[in-house]
Length: 386
Image 1: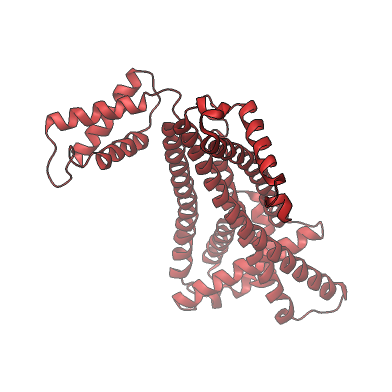
Image 2: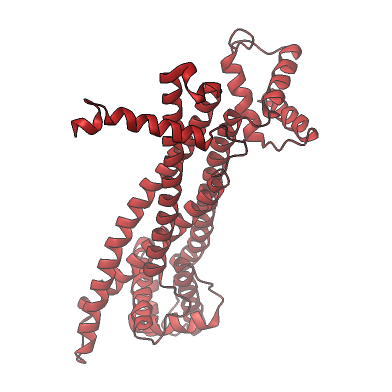
């Protein structure tokens, strides 16, 4: 492992001295590729000699220093995409882990605490503050914000009045933990309903709308890029086919066909990454469509129940509050996931205009399509068959 790290460092360092931007991941990827391409020279079953190491480093630096090279740019794109994906996934997991850790500490304090009696005013005050902090933390809001605290305290009072804190602390650990989750759902649901009525919901964004608009915008950007990239692939493939068919009679016979194939591979790799976005976005769009329908249905039913202005039984409204809470939290997760996708897409977009200079010329594309149309117009061609 140390030897591999030294090789990667040496490759990156030499490239840096040549003013060639190379990440450690790209250096490692190219080194691995060279080893696999040269099994006789670099045998994995034996330790590498100093001469082997020098040869590998030299070959890697030479390859990474190439200019105007579609194959190298394809490698750069692949490594950059993979690195961005890993980075964003780790950032998401770190963020969630931080929230879960903060909530877990509050949960442990709450579940481990038992009040001495109903007269333990100081203990009740402390328990009340801990519960409010836990509910805000689970929602993803700042537990130190006094506006949020007051709003949560008001909603909590209708679900778990202070007078009932003593019986709550008398529950066993597991029951308190489950009850705390219920409290979060009920309180958040009440705040979301109040927000819809224009009476509260401080700091609670419209996650349903925001996540839906976000995924639609990202989907539109991906579709636009796909359309452009697929046209270039079609043009390149048409020119390659024309050159193969016409040989020396074709204007394109002067073009380096291997170079065209390399450019085609670059574009197809780009399309492959875009299509992976397309699949994830389609899943998110369907998910947000269903969330929005369910959220609106829950909200409408609550409006009807509360609008009757008669006493509404808790067994009717609490499940609806819980539903609102869960749907909002689910939309929040979708928004975070799509935010990560957007960042990865932005990184991929840096490869939409290749660093190499294309050899695909407009006159060659026109000639290829004219030839194609001529073939289709012949008896027995596609046009005649239609």
